[in-house]
Image 1 (cartoon, protein in one colour):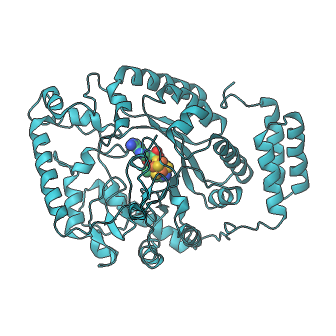
Image 2 (cartoon, helix red, strand yellow):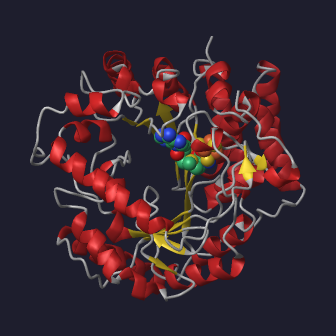
Image 3 (cartoon, protein in one colour):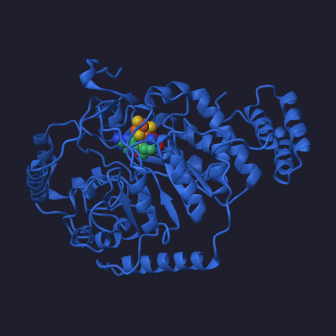
Length: 483
Ligand SMILES: C[S@@+](CC[C@H](N)C(=O)[O-])C[C@H]1O[C@@H](n2cnc3c(N)ncnc32)[C@H](O)[C@@H]1O
Ligand code: SF4
C-alpha cells in the first residue's frame, strides 16, 4: 500500500473532532481524541503530531516562532490593494514607467542550501553561499513592505536556513505581509508550521518523488521519514486553524520520476494540499540533463495525461507543462544537430503562448542587494547599496527590460524561462523550436557580448559552499565528488 492510499476513512471524523476541540482551546478533549485514534491505529503519525501540538500549546509555546500576529490597519490594507490594482492596470497597458510599486516583494536572503539535489546546480558545482546582511535587508524591507501584499523569499538557496530568516519572518508578520516561499521542508517543525499557517503563508514544498527511493535519490540530503512527519504536521495544523493560507507541492518532472506523478496526485489529495505543480526540468549542461523529458516526449505526455485525468477525478488542482513536441532535440545533442533540426529561418509569429507580468508586479533583490527582474534572471537592474529602490524601479534598465520582454526578441533569460507565468508557459523547449536560425544566431552573439562585458571589471566571488556544507578549497580539502 502506498503512502497516498494509507488513509483510514473511519478515523477521519475522529480527527475532525479532535482538531475542532483544539481550535476552540479544549485541549483535554483534543488530547483524548488523538489518543483514541492512536489506540485504533498505533502507526498514525497524524495522531502523534496532534498530541505533540497539544503539549506544545499547553506548556506555553516556548519557541522563537511564537510571534504575535496583529490585524493590520484598514487604511494600510486598502492602500496596498489599490497599489496592486493600478499595478495590474499598468501591466495591461504595457507601461514601462510605473506609478505603482511591486505588489510582491521578492527577496533572496540566502544562497546557501543544506541539500544538493540531482536536478539542481548545487548537486554539481561549488557555489557562493552567502546571506544578505541585516542592514541591507532592513533597507529593502523599509522601501517595499508598505506596498507589498506578499513577500516571496525564495532564492537560489533554502530560505529557511538563512541567517536572517527569523528577523525577516518577524518583520513580515509585524507588517501583515504574507510570507511566500518554496522550501525543501527539512527544517519545518511544528511551531514553525504553526506560525506560517497563522500568518497565512503561501508555502510550496518541493517533493520530487512519491516513494522513499525516488525522493531520496533525487533530493540528496532529504529524508523520507522526516518528510512524512512534515506532511502530517502541515495537514494537522492547517486543519486545526483553518486559516486562509495556501500550501502547494512542486515536482520537477524528469525521466527518473515521471512515472510517480499519478502517485503524487494521490499524495497531494491525501494531505489536502491546494495545488500540485509539475515543472519541466531546466537543463544546465550536466550529466543529469539526459533525464530531461524533452528526450522522451511520448512517455512524458502519457504520464502527464494520465495524471491530469486522475487529478480531475480526485478534484486536485494539477498544473503541467505544455505537452512536449515530438522530435524536440534533446538538450545534450550537439549544436549542429540543433541547427539542422531548425527548419525555419525567421521566428514564428506569436510563438510565445502568453505575456509575463513579473517585471511589473515584482522586484527581486538578491543576496548582494542587487535588483533583478525576477527569480529566473540574474540581470542587474540596479543596486540597493547605491540607489534608492524607486529610482531603480523606473531607471532605464528596468524600462528597457519591460519593453523588450514582449518583442520578438525577448531577453535571453526569458527565452529559457520555465516558469508557468513566464512567456513560455513552462515549456521553453517548445518556443525555442519555433524561433528560427536568425534569432538563434542573434542570441549567440548577445551571449558572447555579455560574457565579454561581464568579465571586464567583474568582481569574482570565490565559491565557498558545496554539497550542502561550507567548503574551502584552500584548506586542502579535496573537492567531494557527487555520487
Ligand atoms: C532553487 S529551489 C530553492 C528553494 C528550495 N531550496 C527548494 O528546493 O524548494 C527553487 C525550486 O527550483 C526547483 N529547481 C531546482 N533545479 C531545477 C531545475 N534544473 N529545473 C527545474 N526546477 C528546478 C526546485 O525543485 C525548487 O522547487
Ligand atoms: S533543496 Fe535542492 S533544489 Fe532547493 S536549492 Fe537546495 S539543492 Fe537546490
